[in-house]
Image 1 (tube, rainbow, N blue to C red):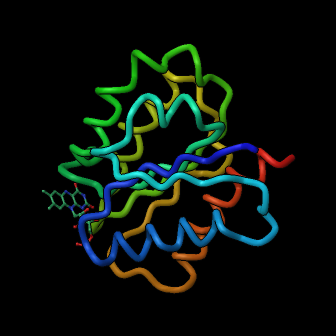
Image 2 (cartoon, rainbow, N blue to C red):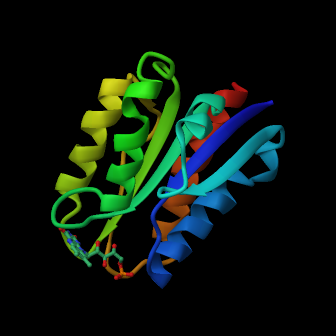
Length: 150
Ligand SMILES: Cc1cc2nc3c(=O)[nH]c(=O)nc-3n(C[C@H](O)[C@H](O)[C@H](O)COP(=O)(O)O)c2cc1C
């Protein structure tokens, strides 16, 4: 069975709603057969990364960068996983008040270094979320799982 690792930092009610949307996208009935591990960034380890086949990342924009929690995840896993994860699919979801550009590029520099393949454009959400934006996030997450089924 293939597995998707969802690594998230979701410290606010809105981010938790986005996290639930990502989990819902990965639980779509058509994706039966794909296992999902949903792990907070501060708890995710290189073992989680290495045993997964694809990744979904969720972070708020903080000071024009990814959250410190997601950065700490990459700090702990980057070199131990480098070379082992190239070619695996991933999707990124960033939420901010108004400017998620730096947060997206900070994550993309690292995923590029790992050689991960973005299977959907980064989902950039600002301010209020609604059914459409949550669905866009869910779709991006589901796309990772769909690539593993294909
Ligand atoms: C320390 C801090 C730095 C932040 N920096 C940014 C930022 O650079 N760009 C942005 O769009 N939002 C920024 N925000 C807003 C967060 O991204 C936002 O609070 C988070 O996505 C959760 O959204 P919510 O507060 O609406 O639940 C920042 C928030 C905090 C607490």
